[in-house]
Image 1 (cartoon, one colour):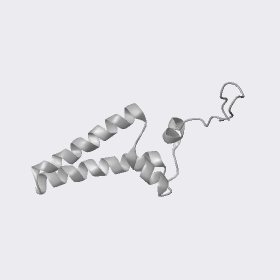
Image 2 (image 1 turned 90 degrees about the vertical axis):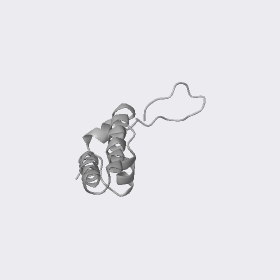
Image 3 (image 1 turned 180 degrees about the horizontal axis):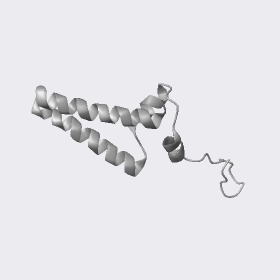
Length: 86
């Protein structure tokens, strides 16, 4: 499973879990749904997803969307003119 699909699966699971907890445990669990939704929105604007970072460290391979967001490495030679992509 790619990182893209793992993040989507995790987000969907968290939304359903928080809705179940809101219904059967306590209404305040709705804030978990709000947090997940907010995190999905900020991730779409910034490209930063804490769940994706954790899953990457656990060894989940990046998918096409995550690969497209990663920055291109730049050489750091001092005094050699403008930075050039590697």
